[in-house]
Image (cartoon, rainbow, N blue to C red; front, side, top):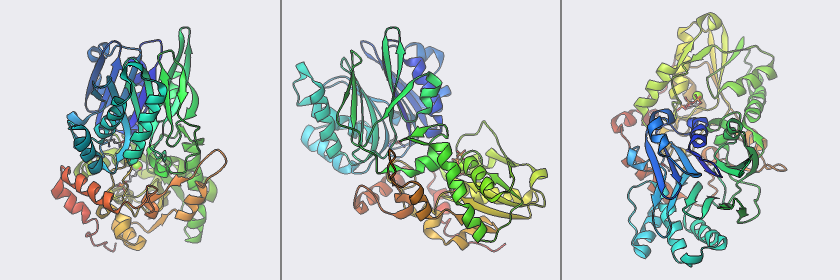
Length: 499
Ligand SMILES: O=P(O)(O)OC[C@H]1O[C@H](OP(=O)(O)OP(=O)(O)O)[C@H](O)[C@@H]1O
Ligand SMILES: NC(=O)CC[C@H](N)C(=O)O
Ligand SMILES: [Mg+2]
């Protein structure tokens, strides 16, 4: 679930790219990269956070009024500096590309590129497959007179060949900046504009929060299957009329996206408050009478406040987050995730001692966070702990860009709610109902339906049995902590104990 940005305008863009990537840091902590273009590509990328990778000296070299940037959350290939994005190629035009998502038919695409075009990608990052497929399709055009129609035609063929979820931004040297999506529009991408005395600057970004920092006006979301091209005269060309997305990843709204982003017309913060409010019925039906509602920082906050309001119980922040720790879920190894969770949160004893506490988080995926939190609250003297998830049980792997391809790692795919309750040592576990979530994110005027595959097992790209096996093999081959993972796979095994 990486973060991507692309800028094209009359001014130098490197500084704006860095601001944009910083605003998207929550989408990827493994690596960061920028490519700019003046009369040549300038590339800087490496492992780590935005602040670690871009030092003033390297930023100075990123010259140009066109550029793209990426923060990586590894979902295909190794978590290695060679696989940091952007990637570039020099034929048939200079191309530099970034993407957010996951190619699911990566073996078929790699074979086709090899058999038909003798292309051998440098790495196992799926971005190279998208880039070389697009480059191969451009190659058969009239290279002396490349037109917008040619570009959109190459996009359309690429979308036909490459299956999965991908939001992409490409610099085409000497021509302009292109963005296109997979046919279902699973991942977010928005276009914005800022006027300058010398003409407009356009930006494509994963989340609209970037526009707020940079004084851009939101123009439109890049719709499913859509392509938008900004040429060197800053004219905007659109491949087709944006359709209402019907398969937008709902987990973006629940966990991934920033609360101050508006995606496909929905303010993430507002949707999370609504998720909390609709949990009230389940809390009341279960006969729970908490003294207070608390959140698991950061992503549990808005739902916790919504639930507290709906059941008329005070909300308190009783878990303090160490702001120097990033997100735990997107850390690539189980050992690393446990380490972050351990250092990240600390309870305020005075608030919870002797209290019945309803603790709200956005989701329970592997159970790493919830188990730790319940233990911390009990040690701090909480009398009873109810763990409430604003997401329904996650029972099916994600193959569209969230690193949860192994059903063995998904606690709800292996245990009943009662078993999970015992495993995390809570007094009660409450999950959102899938039907309630689906109703909240049902297609509405101006909005669109969503992909619920991780909750329902229904994949919008059709039968994925075959691809799922390939993706699981691919992920297994890159596990840095195989031994530890066996243990966490036995999240199934820690035979849920009574307390
Ligand atoms: O059941 P688990 O496998 O632990 O995964 C779920 C947890 O991971 C995420 O937190 P994270 O620390 O990544 O980010 P946050 O600071 O935005 O809450 C999410 O918000 C849950 O707290
Ligand atoms: N989560 C993502 O969007 C990751 C993009 C790509 N699959 C990578 O691993 O680099
Ligand atoms: Mg969290």
